Image (cartoon, helix red, strand yellow):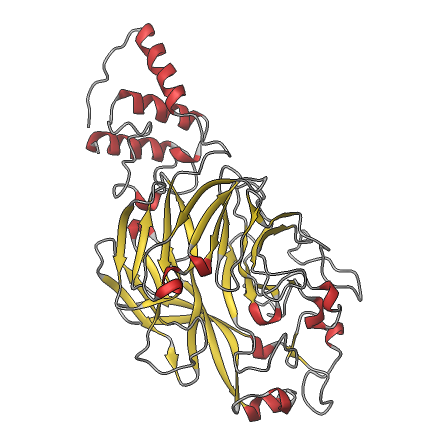
Length: 480
C-alpha cells in the first residue's frame, strides 16, 4: 500500500479539480453512450466486442453459430447459445440446442446440451442474478396429446405440435446442470372447440390462459415461437415475446404462483377480447423491462418488427407503461383487453428514414436516454435519441453467406466502465480515463464516493460504502 500522500498547495488542487470537471462531464443524449457493443452474427461462430469507432476490441470463438442470444458474464466470460447441428431435435428457425460459457481467453468452461427428440433450446437463454440460466425450450406434443387437450385436429401439421417451456438451470459441472424450476405453456391452456376436453371455456373469460386453437397465420408445428425472455428480480416476474401470437406475456416466477399469464399485450384477438384492428404488435422481438436507474425504468421496451403490419412494412421501437398494481398484478377492466391502448413512446425512423427488419432484431435503453437499435436482418446498429435522431451508426460486416451474412440477432451496448470488463478493457483506478493512475484519480473517486455515484461501487455489491474505498486503494496501488 502507498504510505504517504503528497502535500499539494491549494492552487494546485483547484487547478486539478478544474481539469477533473472538464474531463468528467457526463455523456449527453446527442453523444453516443460509450463505448462497447457486443454481438454475434448469425452466420459466424465468433462473438465480437467493438468500440464506438467499430474497432474490434475482443472476440470469443466457438465451434457453433449462435442459437441465438449472447450475454456478457462476470470476469469477461460469455454466455453463448449455440446452434448445434450435430444433435437431434426440432429444426425450426432460431434453433439452438446447446449453451456455452466461454472464458475471456476463449476456453469453454461450461457446455450444456438441451436437445433431443422431445425438446430443444432456441433463441434465448438469460443469465439470472442468482447465477442460474433461464432457457427458452421447445417441447414436443403428439397429435393425440394435442387433440386430448382440445386442439382442433385441422390445426395439427405433420402429426405433432411444438409447444414451449422455460427451464431454470443451475450449472453444476463442465457439462452438467440441475433444472431447479420449470414452466410449461401446456399447463395453462384454454379452448372452446370441444366441451368434452379439459379447460373448456371462452378464451376471453380466461385471459390468463393460452388458447390452444389460436393461430396468427398458417398452421405450423412451431405453434408459439417464443423469441425472447427477460427477468425482473424486484418483481420476480418473467416477460416473453411470443412471435406467432404477436404478443408479449408476463408470468410470475415466485414460489406458489399459479403460472397463468399475469399480463399480455399486443394482440387481444389471441385471447378473444379484440379484433384485427386492435392488434399493435407484428412479429415483435426483444421484449424487456427497462432497468432501474435508466430513463423509463419499469416500462416495457419492444422491437416491433412490423411483419404483416397493415399500414406497411416498417419497424418501430415501442415503450409502454404496463398497468401494474402494488401487489404485482395488472389492472384490467372486466371484458376488456389489457392496456394501454397505445405505447407511451414510439420511434419508427432514424433521422426521418424508416428502418425495417422482418425478423430477429432488438432495442436497448441507454443511461443517457438514447436507445440502441439492432435492425437485425441487415446487421445495422443505430443509436437514437429521444427524438429519433441518429447519433451513432454501425453496419456489421462479419459473417458469411451473402446479404444475410451480416445479420445479427441482437446487439448490446456495454458501459465504458462495465465492472465485468474491469482489468480487461479498462483500469478501475483510472477514473478520469487519461491512461494514468495518479492523484487526480484519487480526487475523482472521492467526488464519486461523496455523491454515491454508481461508478464508485467498485466491488459491485450495489452499495457505495467503505468497502469500495478499500477496493479503490487496492486498484490504485496496483496501477493499470
